[in-house]
Amino acid sequence: MKPVVLAGGSGSRLWPKSRAALPKQFLALTDENTMLQNTVSRLDGLDMDPAIFICNEAHRFLVAEQLRQQGRDHGGILLEPVGRNTAPAIALAALQACSEGEDPVLLVLAADHLIKDNKAFHKAIQHANALAEQGKLVTFGIVPDCAHTGYGYIRRGEQLNHSETGFAVSQFVEKPDMETAEKYVANGDYFWNSGMFMFKASRYLQELEKYAPEMLKVCKEAISSESKDLDFVRVDADIFATCPDDSVDYAVMEKTDDAAMVPLDAGWNDVGSWSSLWETADSKDAQGNVCVGDVMLTNTNNSYINSEQRLIAVVGLDDVVVVETKDAILVANKNKVQDIKTVVNELKAQHRPEFEFHREVFRPWGSYDSIDNGDRFQVKRITVNPGEKLSVQMHHHRAEHWIVVSGTAKVTNGEETFLVTENESTYIPIGIVHALENPGKVPLELIEVQSGSYLGEDDIVRFSDRYGRTAK
Image (tube, rainbow, N blue to C red; front, side, top):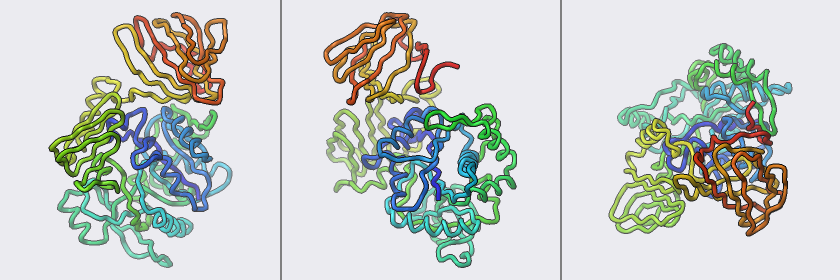
């Protein structure tokens, strides 16, 4: 078996934690590990090849770094130049998996789901694998514990021969209204559509050729022109941009004659909203509250409070969500959290940075946190990981002062290269080519003070960059 982890998506309903540059799959929302890390960790104990990951260009270093933190290998990190939904993404992974003459069973997983019972999950995978080896295209149907209008449903058909837990798929059903959802749950033949699948790579490609031949044609052309860069595999952007946009459900699963379903009762949740995190939390207090971080509550019930940096005090409120980050605070009725997407869309329309970035921005070399700014200055706290280096660059409109707080900086300033250690500083004038590197074994922490007429991140001219970010 070869896992395929779909790590795209924006997770906009979990703003302000989840943002375009750091969406929910890369956040630690349920424990100390990120959703992506938990997705891979729950496969431990199964006989599987290293996973193929699919993400967009902007998130490639997040995937690589989070795997590195856990010491995990991968079977390739495929970069989608544009989002074209799940069917083309899985097609790229299937083509990649078959590129060396093999034909593995693919276990397709979303990077941002919660599953509490790993043993039940493993058992369902083993049942699904037996069906996939027979040529079935298997989906996992979640045993519903309530009438839910946020999920599509799968209606099971007849039990398949030689399978105790495998069923033919009778029908895929769109998200219902509450009355219909209650009927589905009472019926007993309807399951939530998990968005997880299992099939042989060749069978998926065969069915895609039958039902979406143009999609497969474009994917083949795009990956035939692939290029490798460090851990990453890039497909041809111009070709892939012409690919039809469709989900695996619509493109294949609803049309194939070989769709099968394996029930899954393992504490699954797609963590699609703050109310989902409240529902699934095991750490509710006696009043039904979930508290993360520095929180004080008085006469507050059934609420979700998440503090990143500051004290949050809530008095006399029920059924609320309060989430604080370094640069934004969300206060919402717990039953209206689906409307957060409206706020995110407005932030995007106004071109506000809170749509895309946190105040602390992660880069392949480390991170920077904008801790203060004014009319002609900006102050950042910069962390450079051991052995990493920022691009060789120049600014047209700003000068920079660097003060090293801990670690050692190797600085290129014009024609000079020298070391700057703790409690020392250096000055980079406007228009001077410069670079910053951490040659040591511990993180480099420094304070950068920028001054000038324009302080935007787009005032960077890169001359060389080990992460492929120079202009072509």
